[in-house]
Image (cartoon, rainbow, N blue to C red; front, side, top):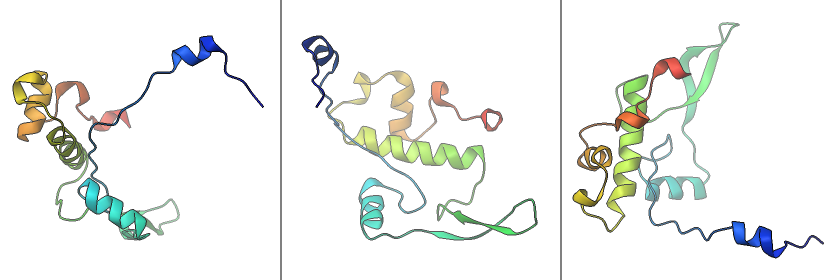
Length: 119
């Protein structure tokens, strides 16, 4: 049995999850995603992408989002962040400017801009 020394114990800080936001192939928000995961649902289907042998690849797609690439990732990020920030007891003037724009749904913060070249 391992024993955590008093010095190591002091390094751990309590964690409090104040809000959550999710946007993925099984749900566009936390509630629907959680329900789909509990029900063991998925949206995997044959996609239009093919592997090196020319065979179709099964993919899990985000429904009702007609964009692809960076725009699609930005939509997913914006949706998750908007939901997460909406659950916090903060006003827009208490958030950094880049987060205020996410809450209003106008833009993705510059510091988390998604670049297709980073893949």
